[in-house]
Length: 357
Image (tube, rainbow, N blue to C red; front, side, top):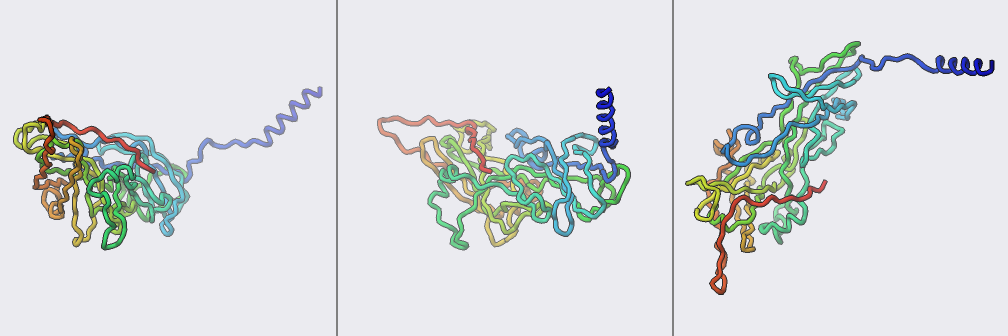
């Protein structure tokens, strides 16, 4: 009898303390779809030479979607979109976000970049993309920057950064969300799905080299670039003066197309680098410095003003920087005892380094 009473008492507690609820409340739930523009010059299309090495590209893994207060910029709600699909309009990411009725600013960007970092991610007004400075163990190996004096104009040390990887950004201001008892779809003002495109540009660059057979590695430093960009308006920070560091690749000889340089005078040295954009100040020159390390252990460096190259038709239409110049690498010094070098060069070894976050 006591056992039956105890069971009934437990059932009464369970029935009075539990409440039936739906698994998901669909009110104020909104579907969103974001296409990304993967037609990127010199990365997925518009190559200067189809046979040359090109940057690796993979579609983003995840997008971070935020809805923010349009006045303060503070993020009110967010969601990560991992569901990637394809249709006739391209690659898109979709998902659902819960947001109360009101006015918002929408922003979305890929959350899987390896080099590009985001500062102030929880406020759309101040969110900014940037890359880290190169570490000291790389900077100390740059022959052109060893014992370099601080800039006489601003008395500040040169800011040398890695070039960014592509950051796809979609944004929309004045997004009005009404109360609904069903799942509606968020779209642009003209009734279309949102579209994200990269705020980073990729430039193909090449120059001719004599004596490439004496080179073991080559890197470049390009001044007059912006070191960061604002996410919402997709514009480079014109006050962030930076120098971009990137590596070079030996290509073919202009006359025969051969990749070996042992018996040829000139070889194409090329690369594809990324940038948030060049500074708009016309009074500042764009200088590129090539730092070489030779197989006989001596460094060699040469700087060129390429401001005019950015104004060429090839640069404006195709983002090709074709430098009409030949750099001559010095021959190795003579050795004693009749010995000598039998120089030749293929592809450079890859340089792997940790990126400090």
